[in-house]
Length: 141
Length: 141
DNA sequence: GTAATTATGGACCTGAAGGTCAACATAGGC
DNA sequence: GCCTATGTTGACCTTCAGGTCCATAATTAC
Picture 1 (tube, rainbow over the protein chains, first blue to last red):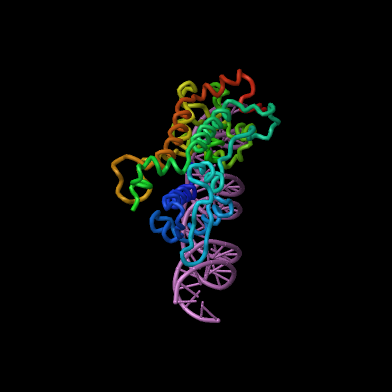
Picture 2 (cartoon, rainbow over the protein chains, first blue to last red; picture 1 turned 45 degrees about the horizontal axis):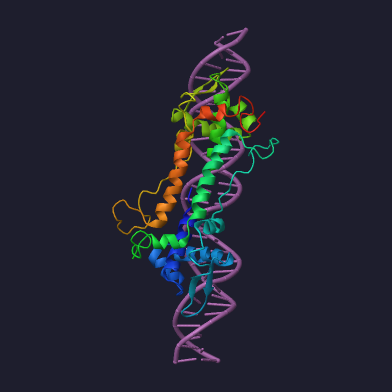
């Protein structure tokens, strides 16, 4: 349900957010988060294109957040790397009763909606603050 | 998030449940639910092995529920075809603070827990009853 | 300008999910 | 007993997420 890529992206964002504006290189992120460096590089490109992070090349370059951590949510990152497809209408092709869903798909979409809500409500800032300054992701380091 | 296979399995179960004990052949399910017949056959085998449904070969054979629809839940089916992996401990290999999760993984697991809860609470019976006897899956037929 | 350090871009590999197929096994009707 | 209708089994194909690699571009320090 939570793809490996999403897990990676969230780890990377949390690590960058911890640096509080100081650039963080792909190698540093890779070392700290156990994300394969080449894969991380590709992942970051998506986040740069989506303007979640900014990149800077050359010595002392790296990545910084392009959006303040109090505003950036898990949902923002999910939307970029692994969009959560809500169920808009019946997957069977038979003409639908307008926008209403059958009981089965109503329930399934409710589960998706609950997930979406939780993700929209959680900012990156909260992910840092809750750790009390210590133990950034689990007890990293 | 909701795999194609899970979607298929749930459609099949709902259709079988509607027959109320009368066997439903793979071909009938396939025709009604737009699931490719060969793939459905393979899918059903898993449900038979897990004793969610019973199968009967030969003329007038087919599939029937092995568990009453008031008892059978979405969760039962999910567990067979696409188990929802809860986050038990930090995915990073660094030794964990016992069973506690970091803020990030606490939130992710909360989303999984909410989904699990909804799935555990929903019986197949409810999926039929809510439709008022009509419109079995969306407005199938 | 040159060298070192970083990100970028594109080609490629791999394993697993989704999907197909054909040979086989079993049950019922005649 | 034979034929037909069904599910079962195992081999195979296809697509894509996850992952690797290398050449290139940009930036900084000297």
